[in-house]
Amino acid sequence: MPTLQDYHRAVTATDRRPAVDALKIAVFGLFGETGSILSEIKKHAREGDAYRSFGSVLVEELGDLLWYYAALASSLGVSLDTLFARALGLAIGPTTTFDEIDVVLSNEASRTTLVGDPWMRAAAAIGNLTALAATPEKDNLLKPAIEALRTLVTAAHGLRLRLSEAADANLAKVSGRWPKDQVLRPLYDDDPSVPVDERLLRNYAVDFQEITVRGKKYVVQKVFTLKIGDPLTDNITESDDYRFHDVFHFAYSAVLGWSPVLRSLFKVKRKSDPDKDENEDGARAILIEEGIASWVFSRAKEIDYFDGVQRVDYSIIKTIADFVRGYEVEDQPFWAWERAILQGYDVFRELKARRKGRVQVNLLDREIRFEPIA
Image (cartoon, rainbow, N blue to C red; front, side):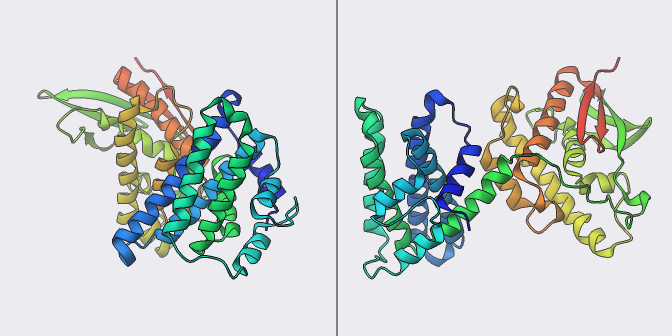
């Protein structure tokens, strides 16, 4: 169980706020996450038990609130435990854990179980903090920050949310997004028990070529001079070059070591393991991978296919994590998905611009690269 000091250090290690906007980002983050929690409460009040993800979403949002509070503490030049001690009037120090705070708050007879009023007060307090941050009084934010924290913690416990659970979930989240060291998982078929002919190809080149047949454009692909798969079109009324999308499957295979689509295409399903053959390499897994590629593409079109982008929006990666839950690839950290997506789109933009090219797929170096061809 991390102490408040441990948690503050972990936040500092993953803090990517530009110094010039650090305070503003922290305050806006608190405002935004509070709004997200209020939105969840609204949905639950409107839909009742039909809204099943209520609790889990609240835990994640509360964890994000804690992250931004630690970031705000850094911007204000105080420790996170100081903010908590002054907000709650408790003997809290650097070695205090969130679990210890939870125990004290849970034992208070005055703890409210109401949803509306506590969160109304919390929203008002965060609104006041945000308003002051936009004025010349922004150097005097400590007191409103403490008051906002007090109302938020009270409101969270009114919903039976535990700070310790939220903090743990948030640490797992940020370490998966911004780890100290980025070490990719071993390839899923990198095991002596897996026959060589059931392993994804380790190092090869794929030639993409756009051709026109009776006025319609197709993309054909060759590996070792052999055509693979069927000629691809965009399968959409308004052309968007999705016919080059197999490059994303090559990126998933290289960076993540995962691609049911390519296992089927290259006939390297793990037939010797009936469970993996059916569940990891089967039709449903293939559909999930194709769904991920298609869904991400729909988002990528809105931002020029990630051109000039160094980060993939967290909501995209979080949705992918939901897609693959229950499959072997669910153990991939967020940053690995980000790397696979960005590498895939780096090559996709080259193919889109040149209409042909060679893609070097290297599972040993865990990358794909574009090479022009005559």
